[in-house]
Amino acid sequence: MSTVRNSISNSVASHAVLLLYTFIALFPVVLIVINSFKTRKAIFRSPLSPPNEETFSTVGYETVMKQGDFILYFQNSLIVTVVSIFFVLLFGAMAAFALSEYRFKGNTLMGLYLALGIMIPIRLGTVSILQLMVATGLVNTLTALILVYTAQGLPLAIFILSEFMHQVSKDLKDAGRIDGLSEYRIFYRLVMPLVRPALATVAIFTMIPIWNDLWFPLILAPAEATKTVTLGSQVFIGQFVTDWNAVLAALSMAIVPVLLLYIIFSRQLISGLTAGAVK
Amino acid sequence: MLVTSPGSGQVNKPQRRWHIAVFLAPAVLVYTAIMILPLFGTMQLSLYKIIEGQQVFVGLDNFRHLLGDERLSSTFWNALSNNSIFFLIHMLVQNPIGILLAAILSNSRLRFRAWYRTAIFIPTILSFVIVGFVWKLILSPLWGVAPDLLDLVGLKSLYKPWLGKEQYALITLSLISVWQFVGIPMMLIYAALISIPEDILEAAECDGITGMKQFWKIKLPLILPTIGIISILTFVANFNAFDLIYVTQGALAGPDYSTDILGTFLYRTFFGFQLQLGDKNLGATIASLMFLIILAGVCIYLFAIQRRLRRYTF
Image (cartoon, rainbow over all chains, first blue to last red; front, side, top):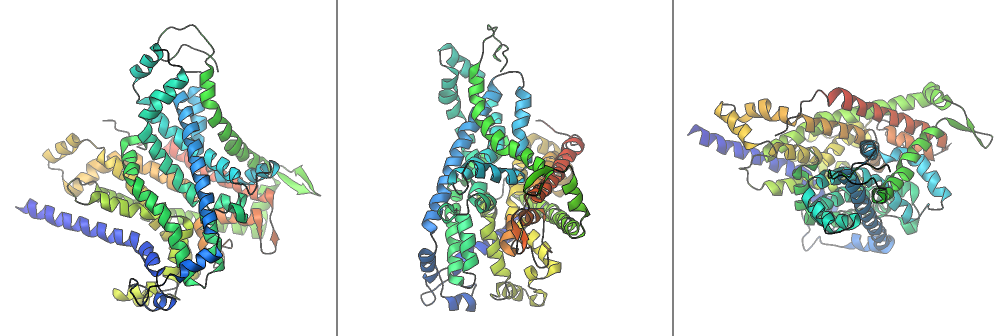
């Protein structure tokens, strides 16, 4: 009898802690989004109440659409993120396949060399990266960002993907070889489809820091035509500090796309994490 | 690429296996050109100085200047000690909260687990720009959300403009960063906890070890390696942080440099601010010192801590 009571009070306590923390995690986000749809007066008078018929207003969004080039910024961020992820996955999977499939001299050393970048942040090389981009005329191009993010994403991608590729059955690949498939086809036709869940996990891990990065856009591509959403909203908010409607609207517009992507992929992210790649 | 027989164990004639090089080349090239060479290039730049428009090799002069000059060295030590406090707060607040949440979530009888997990991870996916401004607005005395909330629980007198006061700003920013990243330790520890085999826990239950005692005696020792990895990841991320401070307090890391960390110090030195011109070589010197600090931390972890942690394979 006492254990039953115990487990009930336990689960009540568990839910209480989790609910409290969920509130702490979500409150700021909800607060920004509801206030972005209110009139200026209502934002200040009753910040905690949701918009109603009287206080509803989209004036902030109108200012943002008029003043900032947000469509362009979104486009830039999207191009940089998608192209970088594509190269990280392609090059990363190729290297991971080479490291996990073949035994050759220097295999372990190569693995360690490529894993170095997991621990050492690429930012520390910024001074030289900027010089390199100036020398090659890539400053203020999206290419510069794509190159940097590809290099940044590769180490972790190779590490996670080679763990997964070790698990692909040897017999399957040997059967392919007996059927006369080339090594490239084995990689592309047999192994890639089997590690697709791992590719999705890596894609999400790569996407979040790229989409959110402020440092490299600020240093390598600060021009109006190449601004990313993160940099664009930072600059916009800096200029419109006193226009609270516009600031809140800009923040909400920056939150919503990532949030939607996350909700779509969250199941994948969690199962990828718990599959044991990062144990 | 030298040739030995393929891994499948068949005895093959030695042949050049070009495909290995083809598979490796793109990743190795991009990684080497954009990451490794610039890293060494930066360290090399720290040994040079511009004298009369020419890059001149000056050995460790830049380091001597940085640590010897009264104003520069006090800025550096201030940034380093702020950075250490920043890291310490993450270790003391972020990781215990992460462990607590993961421990609660790992109970398989709990309902709505997936829902809580998704919600608590949301701040982690937001950009620093969003997080910085959101908290700046909430804590702002102008808007009054923070004092109103404190009023609800009767603690209004505790309210201070936390981001604007020297003695609170750094701790406030550290806690904002903890708020943002608590999802990462939570997820990793959650993954480690649910992969503990059921029979170990059943055996413990048969011996009467349950509840809190089971957590301390059985589960915690088993997840220590994960806690080790989280600690070193936190260390690297913290000593490389920049964005949150830059967004909320600007490059000057106010008030009065009380939130200055190595990342903002590097940015100011490299690009210049207000009347001071940017200095590439001195920037490279700071980046090199950051590299050494991070390297030292990683080495301590790899050689001193990780080896002592016993790993259990099931």
